[in-house]
Length: 363
Ligand SMILES: *Cc1c(COP(=O)(O)O)cnc(C)c1O
Image 1 (spheres, rainbow, N blue to C red):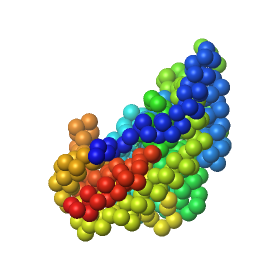
Image 2 (cartoon, helix red, strand yellow):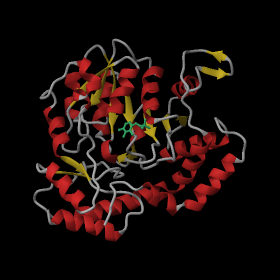
Image 3 (cartoon, protein in one colour):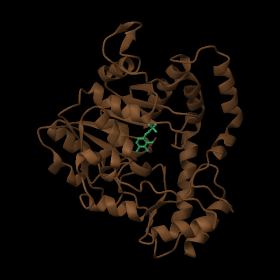
Image 4 (cartoon, rainbow, N blue to C red):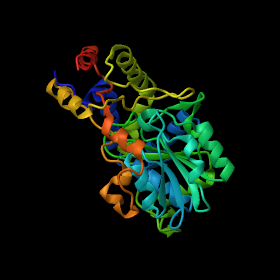
């Protein structure tokens, strides 16, 4: 068998006719940037999330970066961020000129909510929480800390479209929620795309200005903005996928349940979910001291895996200038050495799931 860690073609084939019809409709419309598809998607995605406003952008990274721009957070300011995250979370902060302040994860791989307060000082302006692998952070605690110290709460939902904490969609706890529609995300498009959602009308208006060269009215540029627009083709295709998002997330949950029930190997630690949190299973991450051995063993059986992520941001070459060294964030560094993401994708067959389970149990 040849099982990839992710397989985008399967999902496309599930709704092939709908995607192809929509693509043709947009191509034949003669309008490709900031038109009716983007407007409709923004309304539909905001409605899906119970948010007042959504602004389509060109990527998840832009959503993060522009969040700090519209909040006027930049040079001299600090933003608290999990040490255990994809490096784009951190880049959103540093592109805006602000300094990331890292916090170690808890056993759910998310920011440890009890270790945030000790990192707050007079320079702290915001917390960026990340719902890693699809699981909601403890947003009651995190938003409580933010309220106490009057900090903005921005969240990185690139992996968590639809996740909840205490029954409430994560975005309801936050000032701004940032989404990526990179093809492999739960709500992925067929190229690059991103968006923010917020209930704050002033912030929403600023995103619309910043994404379009800083102008609301053509040729009247109010700020030095960027070109960061979700295009009509991607927005149209996202409208198709959004209609199926709940069933796609449910399918991931079923694959995860089969893994959870089927994998029985004392060498492997299975993922756990925090009480009150839900996950949309962007990844199914196991943990083992024999990680590198497991990778080659599974590869030998035709099973693809990935490590999310092998080098923590504080040890990345890009952030050498921050001056961190090995040992500064030991929990994060241990994760990077022991975690492994198993195959999980929409359209994964029972035969494939069982093959992976049997291989893991024989390891
Ligand atoms: C994918 C991802 C991003 C970046 O999104 P892009 O659309 O690729 O720019 C940011 N944060 C996390 C946690 C991600 O997984």
